[in-house]
Amino acid sequence: MPCQFKMQSHPRPVSLRRAAIEAQSYQDKAFSPSIESPVNAVERKTLTACCVAEQYDLKRVADILRNYHYKLDPNSTSLSPQVVHIELPTTTGSLPQMMNGQTRACIGDVFIFPSGTIVAWNVAEETLIHLATKTLLPAVVNPHLERLETEDLEYVEDLSKDSSSMKGDTIYLGCKSGNGRNQAVVTDSAEADEIQRALPENPTSDVNITLAKIAFSSGLARSTKLAVLESLLNEYFESTRSIPTMLSRGKGLPFTRSFVLQKTGQLMSIRAQLNLYSELTDSLPDLFWDSRYELGLERSYDQVGRALDVGIRIKTLNEKMDYAQEIASVLRGQLSEQHGNRLEWIIIALITIEVGFEVRRIYNEKRSSLSDVIL
Image (cartoon, rainbow, N blue to C red; front, side, top):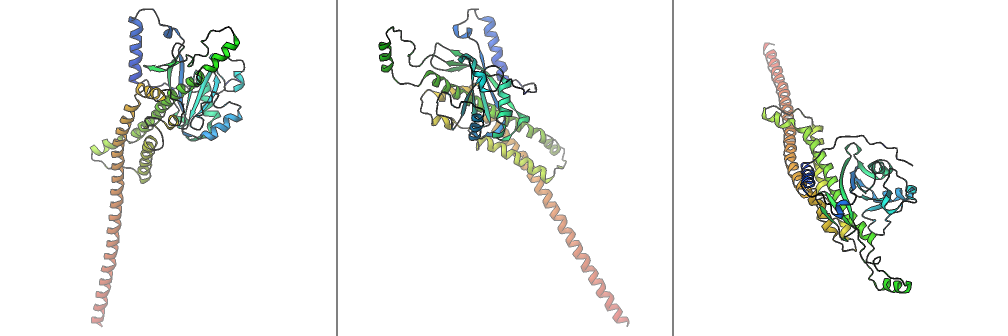
């Protein structure tokens, strides 16, 4: 059945990094010879990441997908506790029944990460958004659908290589058979069986490709999650941008105690999501440490991070949060000052009342003594 979910179209900001790469790519095409390499002649496909929540409960995700009759971990990578993998048709739709009769070229891969991010390879964006915001919504923790963040890259399936790499914003996915089982040309079936038994037992090509996709997907999911935190911090700055101007004019800050506590909590939450409760700052996610395969997954993960400036963005985000921390300190100082001033006025009022009672007592005593003298 076709997907009925319609995504609102919002203009997406274009980073200077992406604009520079696209400009350079245009110049290369304009001034280079018209002869294209076999890789450049291959169709370029899209890799899309979508972050909709602070976290995904992967156990709940797996239960939901089983109820919809999706096959989990179709290539048996044994990484299902750390990432959930399913296959979807490349055309718009969300039901696994649509894949009946589809060739491998018409099937895309979807990876769900615990960071609240879904990454889809060669899957329609409408299908991805429907899956993230509708189908898997019961499995999210602290959703932020109003701040849904998406990022995309291009990739090429390179049939001439068995290793994957990344150049610019394009991933070159090595899809060559890893053990050469399909390259032997024999006519006798008994000889073919003997050759097959003699070949080493390496992971199949599908498993290798899937693991490479997981590595690249994890790097892209990291960037998309970071973009959500950047958006949250920008909203924090927008809500506090008037504070430096007020201070420079010597004015007091007309903020309530609840406002100060709210802003302090928002900043602590952003910093915790960046440095404590996620793998954004880790050099390699835990799922790769648990993998039994040695396929250079760390290299693929790092390539996406360098291409999307993840390390620089994390450093910049921490520096911005240091400045935001100064604003929060000013707010807390203002709150303490207001509380101190309030206590001082309360003390002054109590002393004034006590002095008034004492003056009245003295006055009454004097009046009584004068009355006694007159009598």
